[in-house]
View 1 (tube, rainbow, N blue to C red):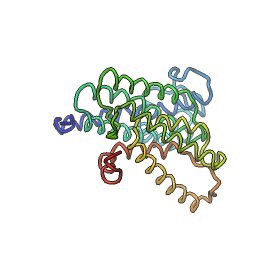
View 2 (cartoon, helix red, strand yellow):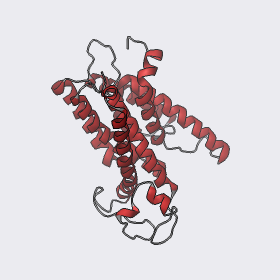
View 3 (cartoon, rainbow, N blue to C red):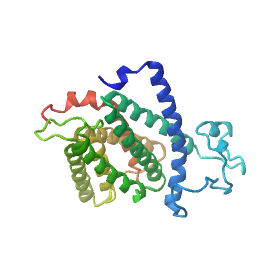
View 4 (spheres, helix red, strand yellow):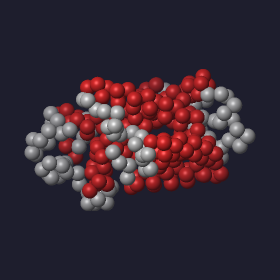
Length: 288
């Protein structure tokens, strides 16, 4: 029986509320992280937050997620310059994304080891996804500072899960192969998407995707495994296509315009976490 089914509803509500607020705070911090990665002025996890316009150091009451933006009327307390709505949306998105991960952890974990490992993996995954959702949106680039450590961490965690703890990787859907393990599932998922992205790069001459997107394939495949990765990509491409069409109709973007991929990939991962257990049995053969 999953942990979700065994917990009182009141406790689940408290857990989800805490998770939302905690990761809304990190959603706010991820904008600072992006700025520090971009400018390379400071070590990315240290230093005071400051207004990008006037440079004034921000106090804790200026940084309270969501509420500070609302109570300050979306303006800096010190220079009165408008705060982009991107920061507010990132805080809300961070909280919602964390709730989705927490739900997946509670529903799929059957013991304490799976709960702890799933939670640790979720921390790395959410940090990576929030940081690159904003970075790709702003600069259409995927730097290495967070993504490469996240990939290495996933590889190490898969090895620990398979060969040391001998537990299931809760973000994977079993493949039902003769040798089915967390490590094999993750490697197969990474390899298939790596080849898929590589074909797109070669066919389009780098117009559809670029070489740094191959690192995304490794992260996605290792995290979700073969089957859930296919679901994530489906939702990512569908949501990206819908937004792309809307942008072409409303702001006159052309088919040659660049659109950031990572925000839609984050949507795809969230959908895979929620819907893979329902979708996979309907559309993917049980022999896979």
